[in-house]
Image (cartoon, rainbow, N blue to C red):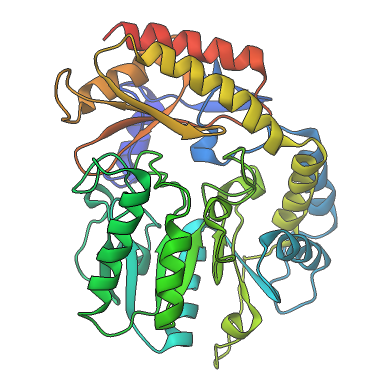
Length: 426
């Protein structure tokens, strides 16, 4: 065990998880690669949990941060902030939400927490609909709506949460249905649920569940839900913390796969927009976001430095069509991984969109989770020079693959070859 690992354990919580039997200290990065304190170089297929969206040490972002830090680092929202206004203008325009307003936070947890406050205040209800297998953050309110036991340490809650079927396509009571019948069954379940309770304030849903193992419903499910929600006056919150900014390739936002009945009422974002800087936020219609009748500010949300980083990062993303790159390179990568998975008994499924790919592992011949196998592949991939993540919900073990969106075809092939060796070792 390293000296730094000893010090980590002495002063930080036991529940603050570390990857690998011998945890690594990442010291620097460039492009799609990072280096550890021992000088080992890794191809990064996890991007600091889907956060390094464009590239490590992207010159445009580091230049913007340095220049802004040389002027002023902090002022709070009590003063006009040009970079914050400029980034809000761009995000409002990209959101698809009419008459949009943007509030910046420092994380996805805080963004979802704010969305819940807005929805419950606007609707006058403390009931929330959430999806089974979901994850929305680590604050008291967001843990209470997280439908993933592994990430929910307390049953106490300021909200009454009701969980809905639909986010996991290939497990549960509707798994054997066609996509059309699956959507019909989930809508019927939602209708039945609403017949038994007081009207909830909102449904919050990840278009593709991140921590839950990159699971997704058939396209159009949330559009079908939207018809029911609108009849009852229930808001739709789309949690785009992991799916936003073009990561899924086909769409800029995950909700656009369910767009038949319009955009969500509230959209939350974080992670990739800052490329590692702490940015989160909420986009909502003006009537919703202006519903608060008490004072509210943010000390650190929308700081000049993080906003400068976000502006530079978003500009790079759009100017270099990284969404298109995620679609093209991600499509090649997922087909390569499916071919590899077909030859490994422990691989139950390879799924995903763009550069958001999950490999579900089970005990061969069963549908039971194989956490030991997932840990073994994680270790073997690192030894081969590749960093990946892991996750999964109820009785699932999933390898999570989410490289920076500038990934090249050659790097995709390199990473696939390392994963082939790591999976083959099972």
